[in-house]
Image (cartoon, rainbow, N blue to C red; front, side, top):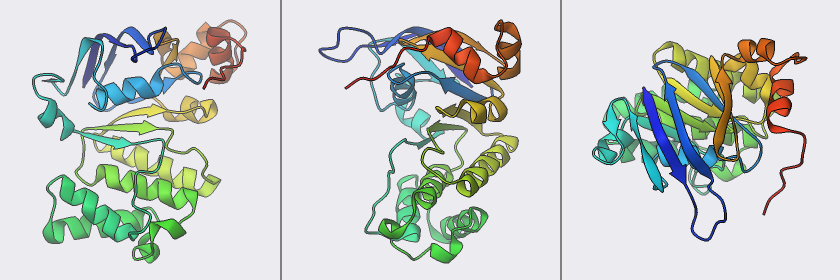
Length: 247
């Protein structure tokens, strides 16, 4: 579903590459986790794959579509749930979703039915006509998710989709993502919640300094790492315990 070849990104004025010569294959219907410390290159990689950032070098394709030759068509095959809320706070939940759905060419009764169905599934139907500014963090996360899947993308990019939400919201979000995946959606997921990633992802890649340091099935990585009992211990063994503060 996704093929990445020697992909690199160096920001203007930066001393180092944010992503450096990264190659990776993600298969159809995988839930693939991109894990790494702050500043490791996860968001930069997702931004390039989403056509929000232009790579410095290298190439990639999604569902057989080359990012340079078929950029507009490629965008129709992907959905993005960004780390920050991408919603209009002065509009209602329904108005937000109708707007984002129309951007993908959806309209009429079909769009309205899809919005209502998703709102019900994610427990937000009773709040459909409330303004987003009144929503809790978990509710905004769920609306963010609905906005990204109305057009039924083949690939869904999730950048920290459960950050800052309560246990109940997290459970509903992950369950809905598993359901989407079972119907054929390939999921690319980043998170600092390593226990969550260990049980949610079918495969993961740990990234550090813009490069993949290891990849595989989470449980296999734990077995292969001497002395590790879980994915968090694998992560620390591979990336070190030094703080990764940056500004």
